[in-house]
Amino acid sequence: MSQPLEIAANYPPPAGLEQILHPVSSDIENLESQIISDIKTDIPLLNNVTEHIIGSGGKRLRPTLVLLGAEMFSGVNEQVIQAAKVIEYLHTATLLHDDVVDGAETRRARQTVCRIWGNEASVLSGDYLFAMAFYQLTKMRNAEVLRLMSDTTTRMARGELLQLTRSFEASDEEEYLEIIINKTACLFAAAIKTGALLAGGSQDSADQLYEYGMALGIAFQIVDDALDYTDENKTGKPVGGDLQERKITLPLGQLLEKANDSDRRRLDQILTNQEIEKPQIEEVLNMMKNYDSIQYTLDCSRKYVFKAQRSLEKFPESSLRQTLFELADFIVSREV
Image (cartoon, rainbow, N blue to C red; front, side, top):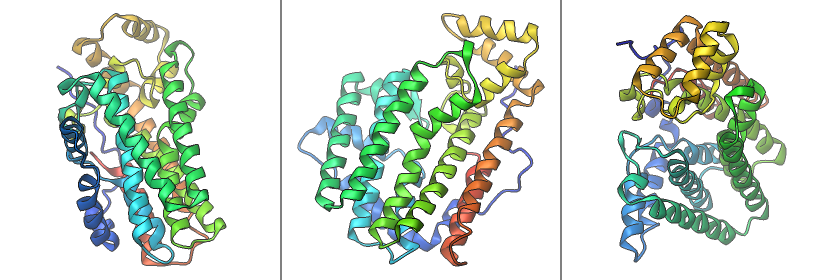
């Protein structure tokens, strides 16, 4: 049996995430305690669903970016904490919907909500979180932040639809990037820009951080797509899940482009099978090793990490700027 692909690449490991985020550790603890308590309702099913998915772990990177954006200026205030919670609720809502669309069995090494309580509960709970997030946004009475988040959620839906309709027969890297920019990266960008705006940052500075968040989010998703072809103990999801769902992410897209005629014909056969089983996944893993698909993917992610770091050059040197710099390094070198 073939082994999962190696993700370590040739990049030195960065500092641990807890160490990197130490400057906002107390704000993260405060945020964590509020995230679940604030969505308690009188509906037991909804409480069970939200506690299951929000309480299942995760790095809380998106809400943490709100805090970091604020700390670059006047610091975290009550509105910033509220915005960070909104970002997490929006992200969680998309996970609930995504798992239904993908027919996912597991997330973060636990059964998905749709597998435990059904598709209806998963979709409706996601709808509730979306509605509650925008209710909280309107209470902030900040038109610019509301516009930003409205635009962001529209883009996220666009990204999901683009991915749903993408065909392996006519896939290219530009189309892949358009999908992940809309599906994932724009929420990273909106998160850090929101924190900056709520903490008194100038429009120019907030826009610069938006560029940082966008590049960071692209790098994050590219690495995530590489991790899908690695050990499931690192990801909490079965190896090759994206392949089984016919998602043409960067590792598979590069393989489709570089494969010789014989390998390409075999790939086409696998992708047109009614079901893709473990033996076929192992075949594709071996092809990816032969064509350096994972190395190529991680090298591409590193380019966006550099882009994120360059977007910080206009800010004066500070411990917070260094935190953002190190966070970008962590994104591409992480194993989970």
